[in-house]
Image (cartoon, rainbow, N blue to C red):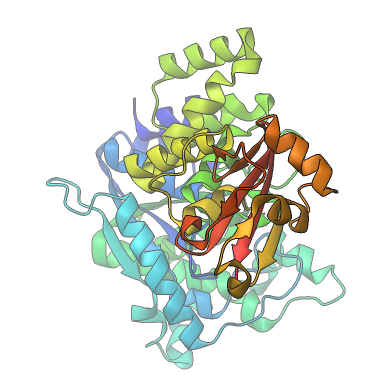
Length: 421
């Protein structure tokens, strides 16, 4: 299949310029941009990033553009209010994390079509205002710019849109022109909210270079329940394991609604059409087994965090069902039990050990010492997933994971984390 055909059966072509389907029959240079609005990319960025990787696997040369320049301004697309401008130091810090993630996702050592990573600050931070207005701004009609959905929506809002954000589409068009000149880039991809920005670039290339460039955009994702894709009660799901652990990342995909599984398998994995059809059929026959969700979680976690990330996530899942905590760090355990209640105890109170009955009652796992003793004697109390059968047992500080925390459990599933301060 061509890149266009591949994305079409996956349901990922929302719109494209007239000759795109024909153009991608030959190897192209294709790019997508990622502004450093945070120190990590999030799973919403996986949509264009996965398709860049897919393009490379199909023989095209991908460019990941890190927006060190445009990130100073902020894209108004999809935003209902003006972004807070970040400082140059914040942008620089964010760029470090994002560039690392981009390099880990694409193949920069491929023999025939190695990926490129570029920073648009290289040209945007050097061009003077007069040069920009003469060479770029002269090619755009304000009347047309005001008809763009992202601009029109903001103009209708109470706060309106600043001149700064109004010019963002010109900066993105300039990016496309630079990549066309430097690397022969003739295809830009992105979300459907980027259509106006991308076609501004194709128009600029046509006017300035009499060249042919193309645009292709994906549908914006929402969940079957109507929620914004990639958001949880705890906030965004990040690609950085320091911000979202591999276990939490894995669980996000594992908990996918049955109605979303097929779409996510097509969007975020590299599985073949036949395999996805098998998974969808198997899931429909036994939805309680979460067959599609399990493979989705494994595949996406493997791409982002590697085999080690998948193994860590699966081991963490076993811990929740009573598996051993051996080999897990306090950070790993804290991530696994991020959503369970916690109790903090002073290190001094643990120096000489603490009776298990006193510990579980003080922590709030039981309401009374009598209830705690009965549960301990019946074998229903665990410290770090090891059964405690003696109510006289003393929990030692040396048992704390990395000297920082204990995991208490009552019965099969009721957990509580004790943190040593």
